[in-house]
Image (cartoon, rainbow, N blue to C red):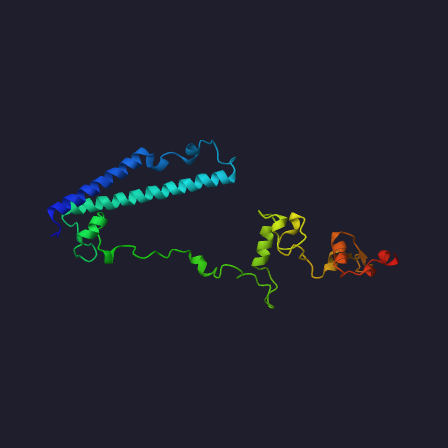
Length: 241
């Protein structure tokens, strides 16, 4: 038996029906937030492939927002219909969880509720973070293992260097190092040796027997000399000069 008076029930029903009609009218007028037509028709483009990525991202963001608004309205309609059905069955105003009367003040504020304040669903924000984040914590630097003496394998920094080598939105002016005049020198440790341990391994060569050591001139050799580490005695010809 509900504790609400006939006048209170009548007032709450009128509000619920008005809210229901308002939402249905809004959905009908805006064609369910434009979701009744495809994204291609909504943008007026024959294909998204030739659009700038920024334009496609904007369209996708707007589409996602429309979906969220539609889901909110549909959820609210479900709550309103459930409240009206409870009125017809004579159970409106009684908490579905505790069986106790819901104060009229709460019903006046939220006519569609079927729960008292203490048993209202989703009182706390749900923790829905991806389970992968437990492994990915802390988020930065966890896989950069250069400082560890027992680490000499492929790590997170190496993975990033490979990805970064394809380019990003930074310019030489934003590079960490100084005197950067080329996009090719902007990566982290761009001058790091690849495939060798000592710098001279990049330009020292021998014959098939391992003898007759010669210097192969090139960028690596010039950089080695400019770093003041090189010795001109490595190249007999230069040593004679």
